[in-house]
Image 1 (cartoon, rainbow, N blue to C red):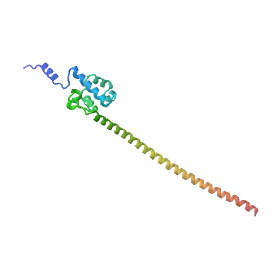
Image 2 (tube, helix red, strand yellow; image 1 turned 30 degrees about the horizontal axis):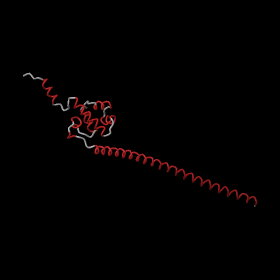
Image 3 (cartoon, helix red, strand yellow; image 1 turned 90 degrees about the vertical axis):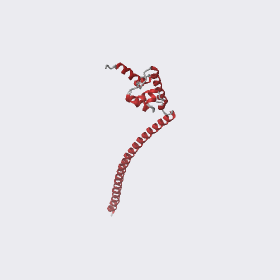
Image 4 (cartoon, rainbow, N blue to C red; image 1 turned 180 degrees about the horizontal axis):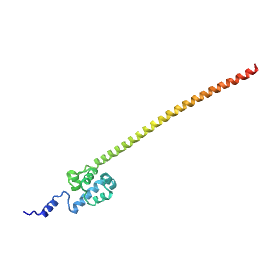
Length: 171
């Protein structure tokens, strides 16, 4: 029996998960662009989040479908399902903008907290260094005070000796 491979190819095209016509591609591109703008993410930032170039993001927003891991990364970065992003399946529609904005605010707060924590750590390090420096200065101050006391004592002895000399001459 001879097997006709051309029919298999046609059948596999029909069962392809991604739409082939330009209308579906344009709808996908519009969903992608709308969701990115809704989340207030620039093309550059989305590229960074998904580890692709800004040019690639522009191609996606022009209707080119992402492949494999890139599609998954896009859906994650945009907080939506692959089904909604690529096919427009309503069941996978992303959360409301308010919820996404709240997530964005939480992310920003966590970032700021991390920054504050880093600053606090740096301040603690500086404090330790200053305490060491103050300790060294206190030791130096104590040494100088001791030297001053010694000099004052020597000066006092010298003054007493000078007072005793004229008395010895007159006697």
